[in-house]
Amino acid sequence: MTTIAHDARIAGAQRTYPPRAAVVSWIFFDWAAQPYFTLITTFVFAPYFATSIAPNPAAGQSLWGFAMAAAGLAIALLSPVLGAIADASGRRKPWIAGFGTLLVLASCALWIGKPGDPSVIPPLLTAVALASVGAEFATVFNNAMMPTLVPPERIGRLSGTGWATGYIGGIVSLIIVLGFLAANPETGRTLLGFTPLFGLDPATHQGDRAAGPLTGLWFIVFVTPMFLFTPDYPAKRPVRAALREGLLELKQSIRSLPQQKSLAAFLLANMIYTDGLVSLFAFGGIYAAGTFGWHTIQIGTFGIMLAIAGTFGAWLGGKLDDRLGPKRVIAGSLLVLLLAVAAILLVDKDSVLFVKVAPPLPGAPLFSSAAERAYLVLGCLIGAAGGPLQAASRTLLIRLAPKDRIAQYFGLFALTGKVTSFIGPLLIGVLTATTASQKAGMAVLVVFFVAGLGLLMRVRD
Image (tube, rainbow, N blue to C red; front, side, top):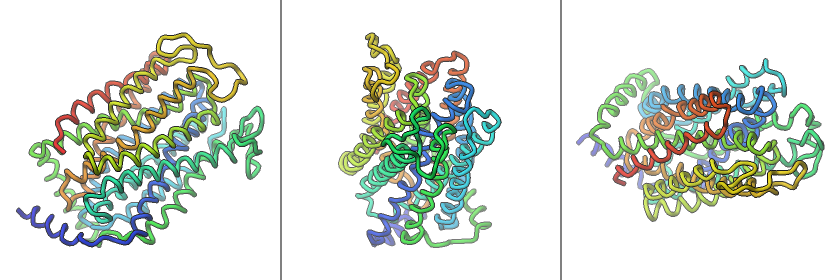
């Protein structure tokens, strides 16, 4: 009864919402953070690491998987605890600022990644893991601000718009890197035909390495409006008292999960399918680099097309979320992902779905082979489904979780998204290292999407 009364008071207090400028500024957090995922973990730095720093692409995929696994384990262990403390203390912005600083510093450190220098591999992987921790924790506390920004019936559209805006930010940052910074070592020209800005040396891949510092600067510039214009939760109690109360409430919440069957089923489903999705995005560029021999320009162009598909997917998913409910959007997205991943495993450089095709020719135009075009189409399907899946997942959590413990449950949401997130990269890394086959490593993702979809069916929206 106390919780119900408290929720009612919160609902009454939230009949008025902040002005449009506050909402737009909050949305720009996704724009600010997205280059880490677009430039570093997916389309520029990760493939560059695998093809130019690691001994070979398979070893690079394996090493990258171990680093992401370590980061995922740290995020899984700490996110619900920090979320519970934030709920008890009230404020979100100090946490975003602290973890945002970690993201900025670790991203800038990636500049040291010179090609062919194995001595930089340990510090590079450490920096990537720390940047991942910073990005994910900052996102936990940013997500927890959503219920105070718009009425409940507009949460789906807000979430989808945020994801779409993030995708656009990823596109713009990728165009900057490919069009003006990263050049083909053979021609010395960028994708747009320019020589790299600031005298960046194509031979030492300075354009690829610049993705790290650009990510840090980008976050500082575009997260600033959120700190200036979006209201924070009011402070409740000092950190020491919040620590005690937060941990007690977290313990109670975990004990109560068996009685909240839909919420528990959703968190378990989210744990599994998010692991698959994160692994897919993390290794998609590396897989393409090893399968087709793509370099930064090809992978980056591929990334731009995926991000465009993701932008439309997230925007449309947000509208469908408010109309049909987040559960249906999640289920549809999972089906698309499952079919696309299964098809990608049947695409090789000289075959598409068991049909032999001509392999890519050296010096041929971009995506000129049938196999490359098939991979491109399937990748766009993945991009279009990934945005709605993530956006609808956070709105479904808001519908299911107690309103007075929203940061705590976003911490549990991050926990379930990360507690096994080391398993996906670890399995991909182990299977790839054992079989020396990238395809065998990626095949494990099918299991994650099937299991996640099965558990989602037990959730009552």
